[in-house]
Length: 168
Image 1 (tube, helix red, strand yellow):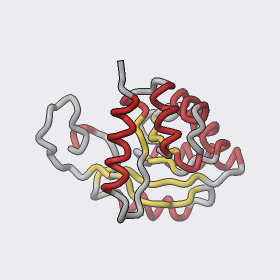
Image 2: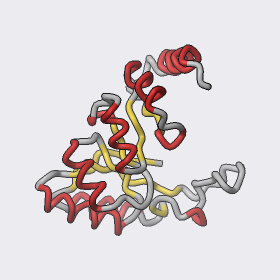
Image 3: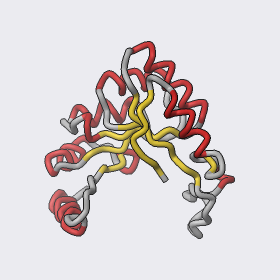
Image 4: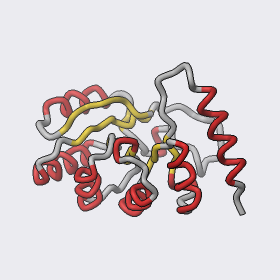
């Protein structure tokens, strides 16, 4: 059982705390992809942080605008990339050089330009439970910080890729 009132109150409190910044709130669907909750967040103006094609479908179903959807996570398939490109999502958070190459090839085939940021692995110990730690080199999420400049340089030369930012 979830309290819609509590979700609205928490969202509005977060929104107020960020009101002096140029910030958007994007809810991570992997935290809870229940359609009722997503619909409520959509009505509040939330964007979505997705990790799969199924989550993309849910976000679009509850009317989260594609311009407020960020596709994160490892293991994006060419089919999921294709669907996200055609949906005109805001950005792909790229996890590796091989993913960048795949996204560039998919983009060529669709005739779309893929907006990206590259997820940097800062190799920082978050001193949290080892099952949820993602910022250390051994976790293998993101591009090692000593390799990221080279990958950004490569991305900037790809015709079907548009560099938008940094993800960390």
